[in-house]
Amino acid sequence: MAEEPLPEAPPSGPTTRPATIQATFAGPLPPPIALQGYETIVPGAAERILRMAETDQQQALSLQAKVVEQEIFEGRMARWSALILPIFGLSAATVLILSGHDVAGGAIGVAALGAPLVAAVLRRRD
Image (cartoon, rainbow, N blue to C red; front, top):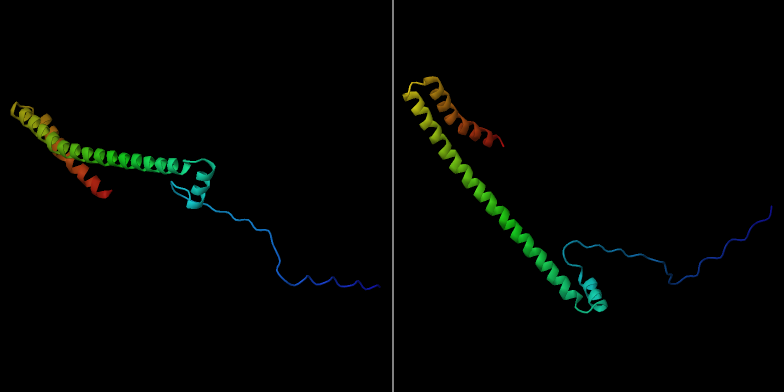
């Protein structure tokens, strides 16, 4: 059997290898190097991108403020309803009882007092 010669050793010294670089970013603005690249390609692009990010942020803040205002309004309405509805219910129950409709008045009175209590207990569970 014939012996095969050994391959030559690679030359010593610097070697080059191909490399791939991948970069990602998150947020309304690209990284500064990309922003500079946009500006190089389209003059004024960096200013437009910054203005777009500022506009988006202002819209998001405005929407958040509206959500908070709506939650405050709903809370106030719930408190007023919890106060006024039982008062009307007890008033109706009183009128019914005084006019001789004891069962109907009693049922409305229990419902007028019971509904807010049930709502409060259910709210505590959440």
